[in-house]
Image 1 (cartoon, rainbow, N blue to C red):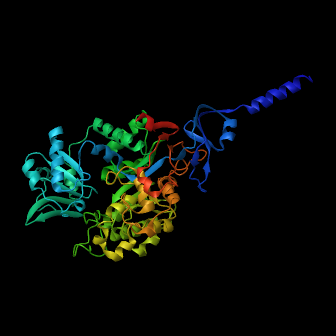
Image 2 (image 1 turned 90 degrees about the vertical axis):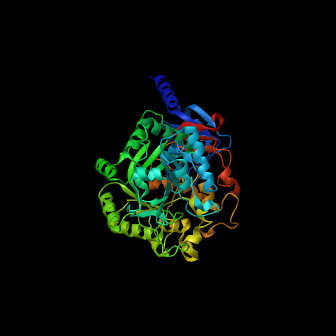
Image 3 (image 1 turned 180 degrees about the horizontal axis):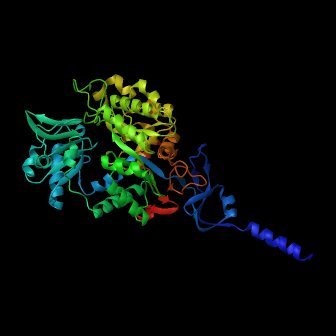
Length: 545
């Protein structure tokens, strides 16, 4: 018996020293956890798609036995980036349409449309991306040339912000639009009593209603095209701002079979059909899909003068923009959403629109907690209205590249006084405690490091203006990274499962050669991702692309 006891003790000690088996062990890195202390560690242990430990390399090597060991060799690791406001499906669709981004004149627009049609021979030509503010003649175009070139083929070309459209006569006829068509919540632009083809906000829906319906394969192709583009920039979750049931079901199917690995937080488009289906069904949540909010439009865009302002536009006398729905309708929809578990995420650009939405939110959410309703864009805010934002019920969701894209003409639109409450990301952060950051692509570029740069530097990529646009509203690098990770996750009710590299969270992360937190600011726009991981699986590698 005396001999048996030491043997049993030895066996017990060996069993205690046995290492835990895991799927992936990363060592010798600089890992920005983006936890509460913004701490860094060297190593990370991953099993079944989750982080099970972080710490020193030696400690984790002693404790874990891994199928795969990745020596980071000093590289930098960050949580997977979250785009808190984009149009993922729309980006993929854009690859199937006329790309008008970067056009320098209306003649350039025409040439791209002609080239596209010669190559594709479409029955209905759809394009997006023109911006008259980038042209020498900064006025809305008219459709005479399109009518001449395409007398029988409908053509619809949407402005870069998605809030104005140029349609030829064939498209107007297909949509049943004439000089007597009502234009509530927008405008049908006329000249000398004739249609110019320019539609602003709500009337655009009449043309969009007669677009050819995409096939299931069209949707699949669009989603997978968008995924490939996003992965190379380190995006692991995207918030798609406005989708319909048919697209959401294709997304779910592709995710279930493993073809669409991108994680998606979806805002349903505000239509009676969507509201009836999803508000009754409740929140839809899987490992990769989160359907729990409604995208509502309060007004249009500043660039097309559709944003609703309290006082007239400084560069257009007696023009205020417009709410896209009467206040009574806004309150009706908001009340219905408030009675459900869904968030309301409202597009609000002008100070009048922001005021109406903020007051509606406050009235309906009074006595509620943790609803996290969002104001998307919050672009022009009256200084008296900032105190309506808070971390519990009303969150700001903003896109920093809008500031650096609009800065050349924004003050012309709103004047020297109102610009003080514009693109005010630091003020919003101080008031609410968090700010969720996104791109709004394809209005802007997909690259999230342009978001990072715009938030920190408040400059374009040429370094203009020298001291930054409204520099007092810049964010620190730590604030910006939080806005693209844990704060964005919080705005999605997902902060307990992603957004930081901590035990128990999803192993969504990126690996880079350079340190985003210390490189010269002018190098940030060219920042590159070496690899992107979702649930511990490598979904992108620069070596394989």
